[in-house]
Amino acid sequence: MRCWRRLPALLLTLLMAHAAIAQRAPLHQSFDLRVPWTPEPVVVAGKASLVYELHLTSYAQEPLTLRRIDVLDQDQHVLLDLSGPALTEAIGRADRAKGDDRVHVAPGMTAVAYLSVPLASNGSAHIRHRVVYADAAAHEFSVEDHGFTARPTSGKTLGPPLRGGPWAAIYDAHWERGHRRVLYATDGQVKVPGRFAIDWIRVGPHGGFASDKGERPSQWYGYGADVLAVADATVASVGGGIAEPASLREGAARKVPLEEAAGNYVSLDLGDGRFAFYEHLKPGSIRVKPGQHVQQGALIGQLGFTGESTGPHLHFHVSNANAPLAAEGLPYALASLHVMGSYATIEDFADGRPWTPQATPMTGEGFPAPLSVVDFGDGRAASPSH
Image (cartoon, rainbow, N blue to C red; front, side, top):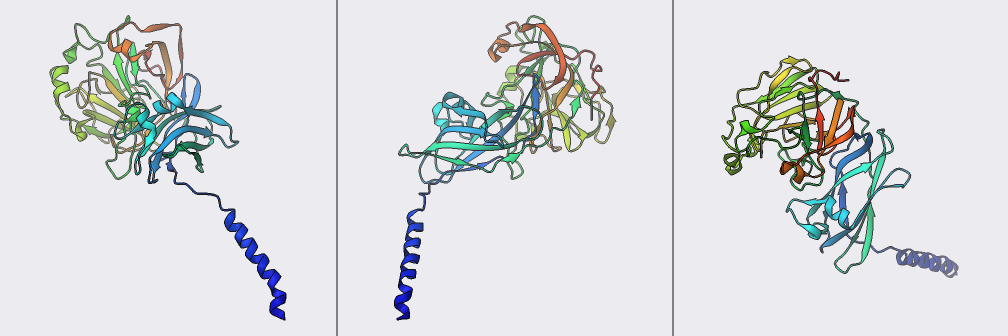
């Protein structure tokens, strides 16, 4: 008799279990979302942003197609919305896929979204990502990560790495093989040492960067220019002994091994886990030794054409380790940056066309904008902060 009394309770339990099973939401393979390096704000032209990479790896058994990436703040406000051509342009892959092929991610493949997220201030922020994607049958799904909290800005302000001008800040986040999009995995972890790298090339008052055709390094306006310490610092490392091609044609024909890509270089320990790198220096020009203390404005060496380089220039970047490639690129600010104008496109620069002067040249503190043209004065005007 007691068994019959228990029957309603047993039936209720079975019905609840059945309902729980019936309510299970369908599951779908999606992307593994990772931000390998947590960024800190950078200020360009007075506006703060976070510059970093979102890695999207597919573990599905079928191709997945990226449709949209939303970057959200802690209040779920959309800070950046990428779709269509803007999404395609932001995506890079190790196989160098072109056009729309970039957003079609095969099983086991990783796509990298190179992001520049605007911020209301240069303070800390919590960031999340929502990725909308489609499977092979064009069914659309979305996935969100837990996000990250941005690092606080370091407050590090540096002096000029060169004197005088005009100097063009050659970089752009959208170039497929520009510093911003070149990843290295030399120590078991993928890193972007050139995330904030700038190639400084001296230009003429009305454009151009070399006399005649610029086939010889010595014909470039900036060749042999003094390279300066950007802060009071200790010399962390010196890499020399690399010869310079006699001509640009000879340099283009050379296959440079990875360990010589930086050419002759110097790194300075700025403190707080930050290192300044000066690369492609002229043979025999380096004036410092490891362990030597230098003051801001001291002569480091001279601008040259060594290593992997398409023409004489100073490659300058700041990173978190004393290694040219096995390090993460960090933002910084230049003090008393005197902006004279800019190039509209990299083609204008490459073709020797005039750069466009600003109606009112601006002097301030910050990170130079892409293709901006600046004057560093006598190299001593700025007083770096620590």
